[in-house]
Length: 88
Image (cartoon, rainbow, N blue to C red; front, side):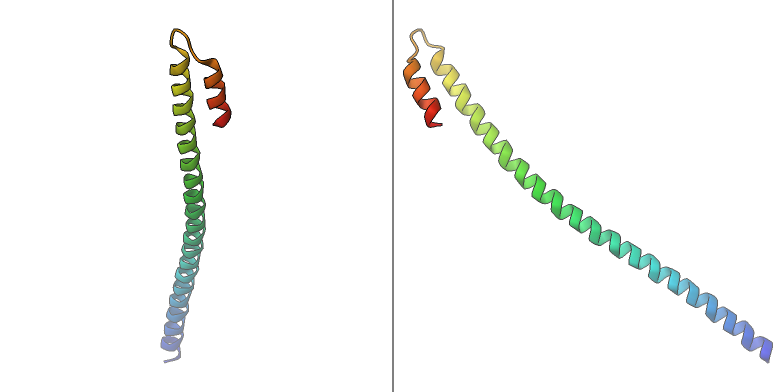
């Protein structure tokens, strides 16, 4: 009977080790997920900043392009072009 109880006890110990290993693994997965969520949040903020910068670059490009077209006429009004550039 004692051998049977010891065998069962060893079985329970092994089972508890597996459970501990699984819990440790789940903790690591959770830490990784939290870390990834933080990284995702940072990437979303960076993306929003880059979108704003891109929008500003597009606006600047349109302004420079329109200014360039104004200066390509036969008699460009350079004073007006300079005034527009200063206002921008």
